[in-house]
Length: 259
Ligand code: ADE
Image (cartoon, rainbow, N blue to C red; front, top):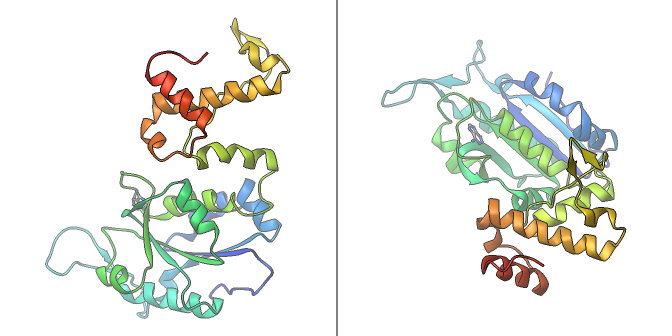
C-alpha cells in the first residue's frame, strides 16, 4: 500500500522518495525529529519509489544510453512518485529537491529558506545518477551536502531534514535556538565550558565565572570573531557584523589583539 498523506494541522510536510526507506527508521524516530513529529510540527512520509515502477520486477534503473559503467535511475518511477505526492498534498508546485553532489552546497541560509516551505519533496538519487530529464523537467532544485560523493542521497536527505526541522517553531528550546543566531549571522560559535571549573589543571576562563553578564557577552562576541577569523575567514565576508564587532575584526587583523 502506498503511504497516504494526512491533511493534518502540521506546520510542514516532508516527503522523502528513496529506494531504501529502512535507512530512515533510526534517524527519524529519535531525538529532535521525533520530538517535532510528536508535536505535529512536521509530518514526514518516507516512500519507496520502487513501488511506482510499472514492470513486474519493479525495475527502477537501466543501462546508460551511449554505454559506460553503472546504472542510471529511470525517469518514470521518479516522475510518477513526485506527481502522486503533489496530487495527494494538493500542491502542484510543491518544491521537489534532488539530493546530488551536483547541487548547490547546503548551508544554514538554505536550511532557513526551506524551513519556510509548507511542503517539501526530497528525492534520493542512487547508482551512477538519474536520467537527465528528471533534472530538466521535474525537480525544482538540487542540493549537495558537500564536495564528496556518497553512495546515495539518503544520508544527505537526513542531514537536510535535521537542519530544517530544528528551525521549525516549537522544536528547540529557546536557549538552543539562540545558539543559531551566531551561525545565522555568519559567525562560528564561541567556546563553551561546564563543570568542573578546573579539569586536569585546565581552567575555565575567569570571565565566565565573574557573574558580569556584560563582560561575558563581550568576551563571547570576541571569541566568536576570533574563532571565525582563524577557522573560517570566508564566512566573515558575508557576516552581518555590528560596528563594535567590525572594530574587533579590524583590531585582530591588524595584530593589536582584542583587549
Ligand atoms: N548523493 C551523493 N553524494 C551526495 C552529496 N554530496 N550531497 C547530496 N547528495 C549526494
